[in-house]
Length: 64
Image (cartoon, rainbow, N blue to C red):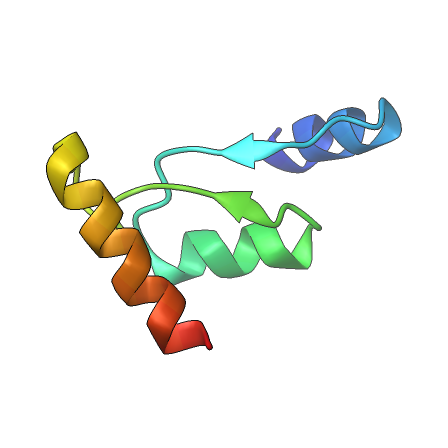
């Protein structure tokens, strides 16, 4: 079912966002099926706005 939703979105030229990704297995499945925008506890818990900027800046520094 998830693969079908990803395929439908891609066929309609939409960006498909997977929410609730909690494991590396979920993330791997999504990447294999060309869903590259994800969010969930695998990446971070819910953050207050004041902490979000700090979190994103730290992630950006690790990528650079």
